[in-house]
Length: 267
Image (cartoon, rainbow, N blue to C red):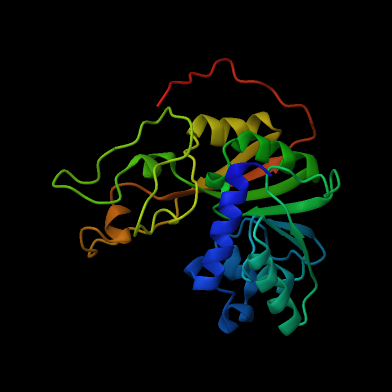
């Protein structure tokens, strides 16, 4: 694997050993109604029983376990073997069938073309330099008409300073940039120790459409709280939504179109 992939694999393995909040498995109470917990917008309908579902870059014993408990045939892919070990432990404890695959989200040759009805992709595209490669792989492994649900860090949020000023939260990173973002310490908006990349809306939305998807819905999960104190995650979220969540459907075409023009500027 390339250097960014190795770096982020080691970073997430280390987060597991430290008990990072994103490495904690699903809670007991989540299994009372697992589908409603993981699909709050109701995009997947009332039942996913028997559906072939991929949890992409989603290790950690939450996504895979809850979708399997809801009746899906679940495969979970993650670059971190430590994260996948949590999936196996939870599946064993709860007597669920979950297939685990150690791989990067942008290189999935071990998964068959048209294999999945549903792909669930939590926040993680920020860890790969080229998000278009991810969308092409997802398009390849999905059947026509399949549903792709993904969540991404908003590029505007990644531009903003994590520390507020008297003027609010200012843009400190260029929108048109290459290479990883500068390191961060003590932020709930980014993961310390990882290499993260800002992907523009053209790349996220346009890239998904050009890979063979039609976007059916878009929401910005609400994290803002009016009573939050300056510097808090919820206070910053009043100024800029940290995430966007997309529902897309795989079309029948496997061809990938190209944008009319793309402007790339140096850092």
